Amino acid sequence: MTDARDSNTARTIDHPLGPTPHVAGSLPGPNAAAMIERDERRSSPSNTRDFPLVAARGLGSVIEDVDGNRFLDFAAGIAVCSTGHCHPRVVEAIEKQARSLIHLCGSDFFYPPMVELIEKLASIVPGSQPQRVLLTNSGTEAVEAAFKLSRHHSKRKWVIAFYGAFHGRTMGSLGLTCSKYKQRAHFGPVVPMTAHVAYGDAAAIENTLFRYKMAPDEVAAIFVEALQGEGGYVVPDPKFLHDLRAICDKHGILLVCDEIQSGAGRTGKWFAFEHAGIQPDIVLMAKGIASGMPIGAVIAREDVMDWPPGAQGSTFGGNPVACAAAVATLDLIEKEYLANARDLGAVLQDRLKSLAAKHKVLAKPRGLGLMCGIDVVNPSTGADDPAMRDRILQRVFADGVIMLPCGETAVRFCPPLCMTRDEFDLGLDIFDHAVAQSS
Ligand code: PLP
Image (cartoon, rainbow, N blue to C red):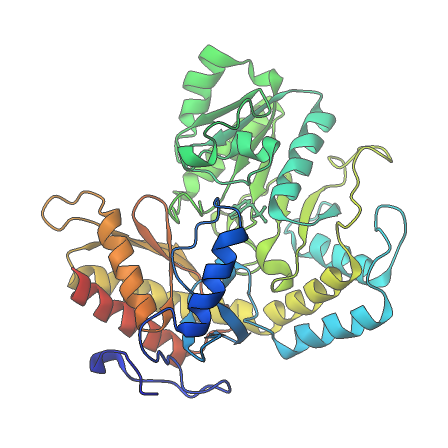
């Protein structure tokens, strides 16, 4: 079948799966349409499937759907497939581990991949203080565990987070999430004694919360994303993180950096907080640490992770196969992809700046490494234009590139950290063209 894309963007890159992008006809194709119909009859209506993509396989930065259409992936499964899809070394590690031991329960017993992983995670947190690690199955579980650990360690109850924050959807993490009202509506009461101030406004903690709501010595922790993710890929002034550190030091509060989306090398450093040069007390990871296998981590200073046996545990948390995938992933990131995230990230930031200069509907290019965003606005008023943003993303998808929204009106760019320059340039050209066509 011929390629249905506009001749302006019909350029392709050679890829082992075939020339990419490749979109034959309108989407979804017949196999995808049939699969979507079956899925939608039985799946929870809470899913937010904005694009009719039914993936059959992936390799590197390319996804092929069940009709043989190929897409350049600028979303990486929401910043998860850090080494790309099905990296041969990650696949090999998973296969090897699955042949030897799939499960034992790391809360009760020991196995080598868990030991290797916790040693590695403890070593990548900067600073000289020894760290301890608790493994979970997901980001939200890491947040829950850190919530419990901070209350347990401090014997205090209040936890502070920020408007726009996304920390997960279970009842504790949902108490901290404050990104879209829909994510909280009708689920309350969530875990009590959580409070929020505007992201970037550290002074509001002292001026409002400590004045009207709670005494500082009742606060266990402040949870913060060093680069706010779901809230719109917002890069704070480094002073904000320094001010939070100072408030925590002054009042004996734990500073918890949720690096679930921004960690694992995505910003060109292991952690986004490193760009500001601060040192948290607890660091949370998940998403990108195992290239798609479900695992999360709470990494805390040894004197903070002081709970006794039985205080926390999990049947599946840190299962051997996920640990093996994480060890291989972190090795690849360290040896190859941290540098690529830094270098390609610099190109991405320049490119977004020139796109904002070229298109009046694009504003506020921002980001660190390969975690960047740009807003879509009404060119006359400068107001957010989420409808236009969605039209652009649908157009980009029809042209064979996967990009996701975030925040009120932003497009997020979080490709696999292994993306090549050619893939990157072509994806951004297609975005550029889609903006011109849709606005
Ligand atoms: N924290 C942050 C910063 C996130 O971006 C997410 C997910 O998007 C979570 C926590 C929750 O992670 P999970 O979806 O694995 O529960």
